[in-house]
View 1 (tube, rainbow, N blue to C red):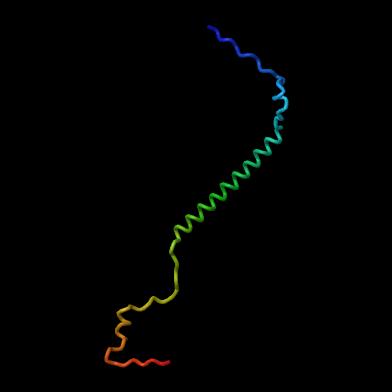
View 2: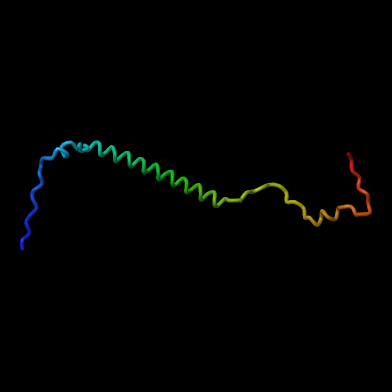
Length: 92
């Protein structure tokens, strides 16, 4: 069985609906492509910056350095307290 070949495509738009459709020119298609590319690059850049900031904040969470002297031990401070038999003086 031999298959019948499909009919040839018309070279001219014949229906009124197809005649009203404006086919974009090559320049318009290029402009749309450039705009889509720029928007994609900006989106990827913002997403990358957001990921870098989140990673930085996660790794440096709670890490800080101070240059103060460490506090003395609590047991040493307890020895300097007056005993109960002594009177304490308060200055107003």
